[in-house]
Image (cartoon, rainbow, N blue to C red; front, top):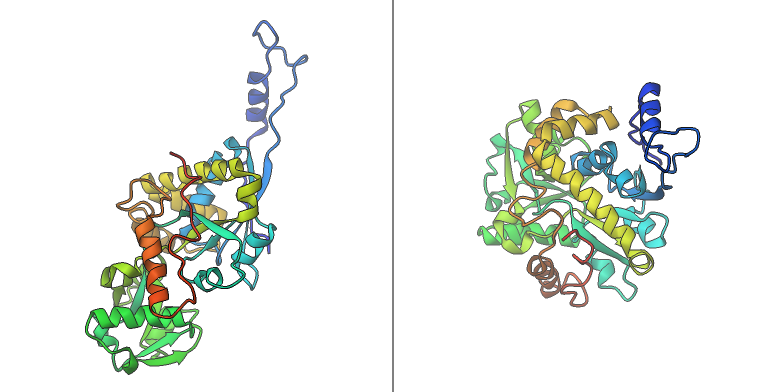
Length: 341
């Protein structure tokens, strides 16, 4: 369904002032009656999210609110994903851009008919996901997941990531009690012993735990084994659009990069912009999340959006070596070609 798009309103007086300033005669003096304002028509572009709006997406809302997309000639519409995800809409050409994940799309890439989408930028420089648990459970290392329950969505990649993290710490994944369940409220699920542990993103559920004063332990996949430092999430576009309109991709990413760079430099202001665009979000959670993500969007990378080939291909090689995909992918599925230089 369509999501509310942030619209900046100008007063009537400001509009009149802008109109007067933009109209000049041949000699360069103002003549509002002879010259009409001829702003270029913006190109309508759709971005489909991976979930409901959250701080992973702040840069898009900032770029929209501050006029970066307008400057790039883009009229952006942000929508939430259908049941089959953002990838399907982007692949079909019904959306020009979407949010994807290197791990979840791997199976499609390795199939006989890979989904025709490509990652063109990393939203966050490192994998910021991991396992959260209630502090009194004592799960302060991956090995200590043994004997505890974990809420799984029954994905082979998901479970093998945890298995690898545990193995690197000397743990045995077979000793984890897997509970097939969908957790929508992490703190409640942990507090009521529905499960002992669950996969989360540090920039959201860990931030929420801090806001709520929930005592927790958090285990970071990327720090457990370098091969697990894959890209999650990314911006994807359709392969057909790459062929037909590469300049649109460049313009979109240039404006988006400015939005995320603003987030890094001004996290509090960026959080406020997101909350104004999406008023149902908890401002305290958004601001806590932005404190973390301001350090993570670019992190130790040279610039926002860049995808490192060694990390990308290393993860796909790991999936193949562990029998999780049927063919070697290597560097398949991403490009840095459209990022601003």
